[in-house]
Image (cartoon, rainbow, N blue to C red; front, side, top):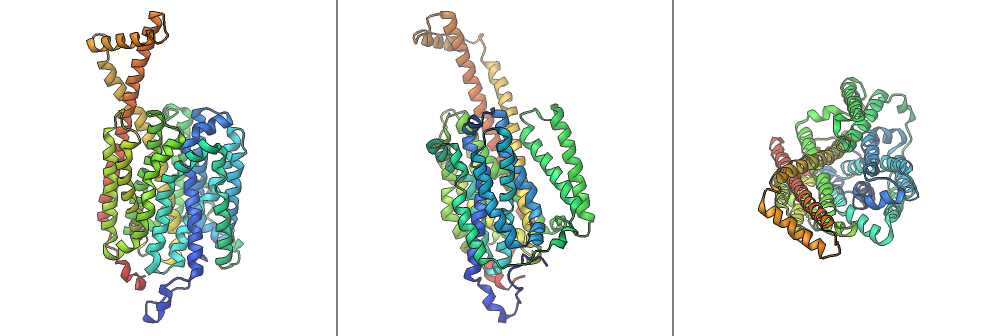
Length: 534
């Protein structure tokens, strides 16, 4: 059994009633863990609204600036599956406290970088330290809280996973516009200090088990690290480099496929696997993780698409983008704490189905974007999305973890969190590609109609030429050239808007599929009975 099991096993007999309530010490530890998960997920998105400022600050171009987010995600996705193993080697307490200290240090180091190379290294190390905080928070819910109180813990974890991406660009945008982009890397320090002190006071001391290093699944670790790093790079850079038309992306995709295939083969045959892939064969866990992958796709996808739309189409600055996105996060603060009460009255599958349906509806509401669709017009879809997101992750986590023993908590947490984050990476890359391709498609369609053979087009050019001629451009040829450029810009803007509408349609369909997958899970016992459930 893992030494992360911090509470003794409970009997199902009536004599074990005191174990149905976690101690104050356990709750302090769990809440401290949630701070870490929140900060780690927040830092995935906190740079999104501020990328242009960061790129300017370190003197790199827009294309290369994507590595600021990519390197952090690579670090996170690689370390999440390693967390269960390394926490047994160094002890749960030492490992989480050490990374709680390293996370803000690497974050502050990002603020002092002056070139892209050092920024990539520091962000990668920050992601490697922060990535362990996500699955360890989830593990503490499953190991330190009794079944009857786990829905409360799962709700707190859901708040971290869904609220942090939504509020990240808001915080980043505000700090960037008012205090400069470097300040977004300093905000991790105060909560990290609180977290480290709380964990040091509440977690039990345990001996290190360095002998496990000799027994480690090193072949699995190496193939996983190389495979996931290559895959993440392909996903983040593929669209910019026209995917397999680029020799670099093509070779990297082959590396990812080869090493990840080897990783799966190793994990299914080795005696002590790094990642217990056999957990996916369990019906609720496997289907629940599939739903979480699709949710990760939509969750990270919407947080990626909306700032892009507001910045590229509506020319919003970082703070304005953050203010719009805030309405997808703030309502969740009110709704998610109510989930444990809802789960006592209604089946988790029903709650999750309603949540996914509302999330899908909010995406379909954005399929009718127009040049007039800006912050105010996005308020209602954002509220609907917030309600939907609030109802999704807690019940799905309950469905996924039903039947997971405390000794399997670390493995289950690492696997589910890794795949959800990987789903988010796939989502961001896929939506970026869809946006590019659909913008080109719509531009060609619109361009076929905007020709000089049409009277309304000639009249529009004449009006624009007159406008520019009357506003300081005396040369008629220059005014006409300016008019043609303005008309071309209008066509491109409209094509871009239609492309964004198409990405929301894709998100809506995938969320509908995620809702349907829940029909294949087994019914989970009501949480009122969970105190005696195993």
